[in-house]
Length: 162
Image (cartoon, rainbow, N blue to C red; front, side, top):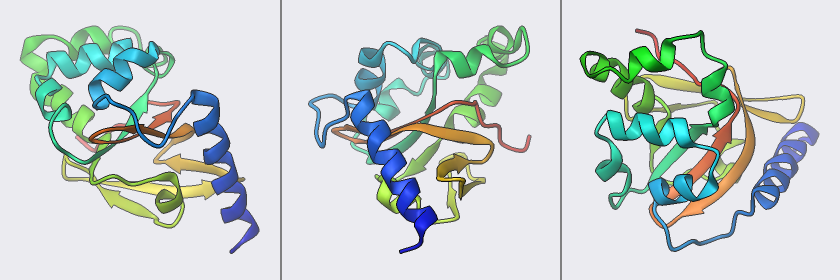
């Protein structure tokens, strides 16, 4: 195993421990995100997009979840615009770009270079200086397990080609 791959695996495991991740939780992806307290904007967007029931479904899903801080870094007015009913299709496209079918753990993520999202586009996955990158976002916490999938916390909202 390469030194970079080993560093990346160590980083994501350490981040998962710091977040308080366990191998199982009695909560789905939405309830896990709500309980974390750092995904209020994401949860509001999921609700506005009508995706709550989907992400509470059987899955499994892998969600690359931007924090509230990541959403706050978007240009001023972006969130308010996306949450308007007439922009629902665009919001759904952005949110589903953050979701990959199946439960992909950190160990698996560092072994692949791309994944097809629920939205239909492909995200790029790489390891740069020991950090796992999803497009231009850094995975800051990995393997937050839910009963219907896994969450990897990212520091940037990733955008599909629109």
